[in-house]
Image 1 (cartoon, rainbow, N blue to C red):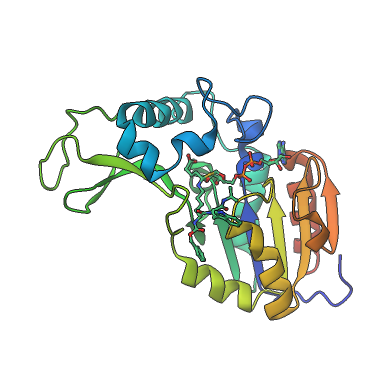
Image 2 (cartoon, rainbow, N blue to C red; image 1 turned 180 degrees about the vertical axis):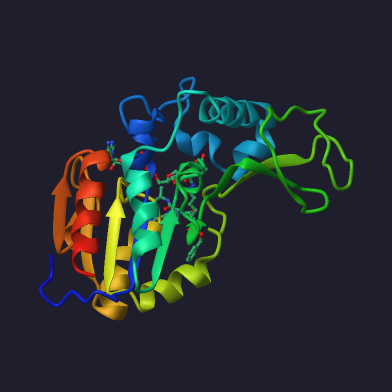
Length: 242
Ligand code: BJW
């Protein structure tokens, strides 16, 4: 950890699929990263949804059911980040690329789910956003305008604009510490946050992963290991500075 570290430092944490692996949710680009033989890029685009809406809805219905399975729960990494937010004296923002709700369930509140939320749907007719815990079918109707067959997952696909980017950029601009956890560094703009935090604010940057990411060389420090072990350890170190 940096010697210049201050107890009221501003912290920005970015998480990816790796933080939820030990909760039983698969990553995108791991060995089991295919879905029914499709690469993610084939289902996670607006064009794929326009071409094959049923295929894409099935992909998200299945993931929604998995997320709500009784055995899926926040792990020690999610809980440690919620504790850091509760006890940290300085600014804190948790940005997640994940669409699962495990950070929320663990108690994180200063949270930006920049790629959307699996347990919400958006109506492409009236724009309304609704909580949604069941499968979406062609006959599913919007609870606001009543139209059927117009619901899409409230997620950010390739080519679409991630959510709350202004809030994220403002936090990166004043970050003293930037921590990236369990993300492969292949998807932008998230993969560029480490460079932005270093350039804009001179942040100390730490990567936690089981293997170096595609942007590993941008970090000051790397800690290899499963998130359920590395995250609680880092959080304990940060809280010991207070
Ligand atoms: C563990 C672990 C354990 C395992 N403990 N770790 C050319 C160059 C640059 C950019 C582009 C380009 N062409 C197009 C683009 C832009 C495009 C992009 O990045 N494409 C790339 C493929 C090149 N990006 C976009 O289109 C984005 N929008 C955009 O750019 O808008 C314009 C814009 C302009 C200017 C400024 C800002 C914006 C939108 C991207 C949307 C991504 N959507 C998805 C799907 C969301 C819905 C869903 O979940 O289905 O988001 S794709 C998918 O990838 C998902 C994830 O959030 C995202 C990142 O994946 P993640 O989390 O890194 O997972 P993995 O599987 O890749 O990695 C897991 C990691 O965990 C690994 O490193 C493991 O080692 C590790 N791990 N076990 C700790 N136990």
